[in-house]
Image (tube, rainbow, N blue to C red):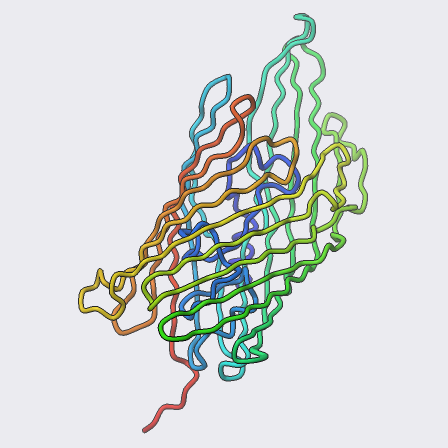
Length: 392
């Protein structure tokens, strides 16, 4: 897990110019199986899926089962503004998680490593001052924030579970802007370095019940606003001097969400989530950057033709989802829309499943910058019977 966390923190998982603002492009950290369902997770409670977005779901793991989930993705981006279009592509490791029982089906635990935010952009623009001095402004950013989490949940009743995640947040973000004149004037590069090293908590609860082939669950999650431990340094490379260096007066925002899931006879699943990230009331070290609340709505449908059927295709779940979200920085205009489809390939005689998702997304505005992207995500969810006594 330490090796994976270092690898994740070293990657640039995005090329988006929108990652220039704030802490970069946020990751909602839903498992690969639920990305095809629009990114739902708060109300989801399934025994074959590790769901770190809802810490109360860990008790659904079987009392003899150890689970392991590893995901990777490939992404193609198209950017368009009034100067033209540009295409980029990349592929990266997404996350690694594991889940296992602590005490029968009453207490479950999960551990994992995943990205919290990603920064990766490189673009430039040419301009002039009164047609006398011509210059090029270049912007570049790298880094991100990674989180290592540990979560514990307990079934307080046969119909109610409560859980909590603790996250260790770490990472560095480098944002640079440079101005280069063609008339021989001195070029200047300004570098802003953000270092994060902190802990945050998430709490979750679920109500669930099953009767006569019908099952449902209602879930909620909450994170309190907390002061971010870190520092920021501002440097000017023309003189190699540090202009300023200070403790980072920033917050993790208060976050809350609700979700619901309904499943009929193991064949049809319906789920919906609502999340709200209260960035408007969170401090940020750069007062010139205005933050705003981010809302996200996710809807997902899954259909399995005949669970337990003889044909392989009868046991494959087919998924489709939709989501809509606001940017958390006011400088970014327009909502982000995503449409996703996916399926799973279960292995015979074991509980291991391969999940695939194809996601199309769009964000930005026509008068600024529009980004269209395709993301293919592949993850393997391994389930093994570890915790039982063998009979000789």
